[in-house]
View 1 (spheres, rainbow, N blue to C red):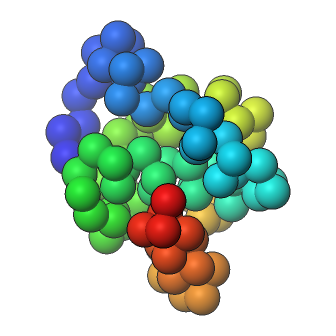
View 2: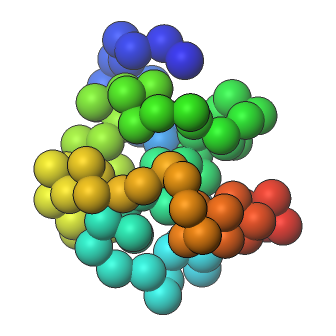
Length: 94
């Protein structure tokens, strides 16, 4: 995934839409931000990120504002483990 994004591209590609909000409604904190970013990454790339570094910082900062979570909290989201597997399953189903 490219790492340089214009503000217009960030808004066009990383904004949560109606169905996205339904998926993140019951999540809080780093989980809410991480899930949102992984969801949009999957929509854009057709795959899940292998590391959090794959997600552009501009996207992290933008989505953090949308979901009302501090951008720095994304570091607390794990892409491995049971929760991450559950999130990937939810995203695939959606």
